[in-house]
Image 1 (cartoon, rainbow, N blue to C red):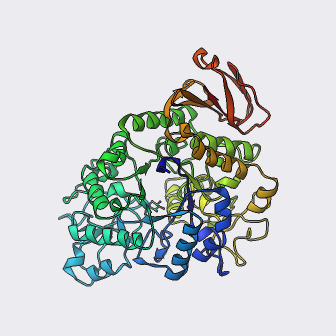
Image 2: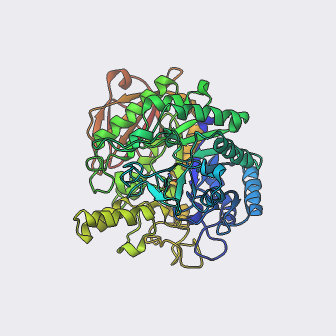
Image 3: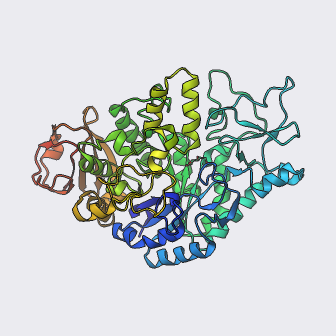
Length: 550
Ligand code: NOJ
């Protein structure tokens, strides 16, 4: 099997299943649900970080890369999980957060205590002569990107939370330490790695102010040295494993750079996560706004990336959802009137593209954003900071709350809904984030009366049985249609025509003659009654249909 026909499932361990009744998901909880994962027939699971961490950024602030955080279990639990997943033929992808460590990490603590070796692990800088911070850079979670380094008078760089200190990748000792971490987990049978914000590791040694009209991230994102680091990391670690599958999380990257990151001949990464298609509901490019999504822009971005990556020989990771995104069903579908149909349409759109699809837990049963009523219901630092900033910028409490409600990362972090009980069958204890609509959406009912899970099973099976899906070329179709996202996949004389109606009203598409004259069959559709192939095809609300033409 090639990696192109694999499907990866993402588990946010904190919210998947709680086996010990403390309201927080854990590794033994995942062991308990392997048969469910097997039923879906995914190939690999990406686990968000479960390493020792003070959890200020839910595990993306790692204090010990080599240990399982006691909240999630023990190393023995991990080893049992790994063995059981291996038996089930499911691989493991671990989250490597190598751009920064928690300020609780031993390296940072030693640095604080005056150890020069470890001070050289981080970006420590003096204030400007006038006492200002070393640069005007902003943290991605709000506020300045510099924190006071004890009482030394110096500052340390943190592109994220003040408790996430950026590592200085120029220091070869830092890089060697990080490769050791990867190899430690490889020795435990791990073949998959997701690299957190890996394209911001290439900061200059001399850090300078961003000009006032330029976002500071442009100074340190996607710099050429990142390619060198990735090559070196590949050789020193996972590149020695022919079965390795890797994905780099690339913040604000470009097609040209992503081709280079994933071109097999470059020996860097298998694929990349990019986010341009998930910024189409940002007003003026700002995340903390509320705006309907721009469908034509979404099409354009997906098309451009599909074409550009294929042309350069790169490979895309395909996804709508993850633990940082509100649920796609709320953004691009209709969870109220067409929950199943729009969930299936979104799944079809992604899974039949060229690339590797990722399913974020709960997507396969049509989970949607929680209906919270107060800021006290939220946990995530990013949305709490954003709320304060929105108020400070003059928004009313109601307006600010409405924005948080649509954009908070907690939207996807709510517990997996296993049944309709008070805590959604996730825990016997009050969960760390509350579920709100488990009465309508849960695994138990979905497996008996639902259609979304079965539809995902079909899509996964198709990728494994139809090389046109895993290997075919991509071409856009009906680019100007304001309601339908359509594309073609071509492989060995066959053509797959994929039609996706993104709206709750019917529409008819006219296929070009070159396609309309060919015979074929329906490979998959979320309206099973449709069986005919012809030049004019009617698409019902949120209908997806894929026709395989000879
Ligand atoms: C991206 C991760 O997905 C996100 O959850 C985290 O906050 C940042 N990187 C910082 O590690």
